[in-house]
Image (cartoon, rainbow, N blue to C red; front, side, top):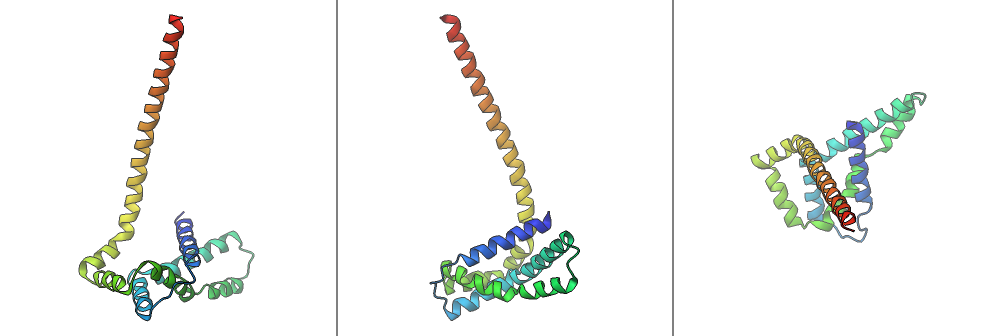
Length: 162
């Protein structure tokens, strides 16, 4: 399941990067700050991890494929190529000044703690959000049932009066 989530994240990021406006002009300062941000946020490590897990997942589903084929496929999955695709996407939304300020924050103790705790926080937030969603869904279902019951009873009373 974790592999599937990482695969979906990777594919979403890749699709987003591929969809970046090819007409975006990226300044040297933006390029440098975007690459700095991706390094600080651990994007390269995440991409390496996702690629490794993708290959292992495919290997498990196709054990008849020789190891050298997997090695060649892995070699074709260049993290730097992926990062090159992300640069215009980030440049589309952030100026060099914005990126510099964000990166400067990420290099502070608070910024490093934010980055360090973010994966755990996101995982726990997903659990909390899922629980909240179930509670809301239950309340909505109860209200719908109550409304339908009230309408049914009102319709029955109307029939009785006729």
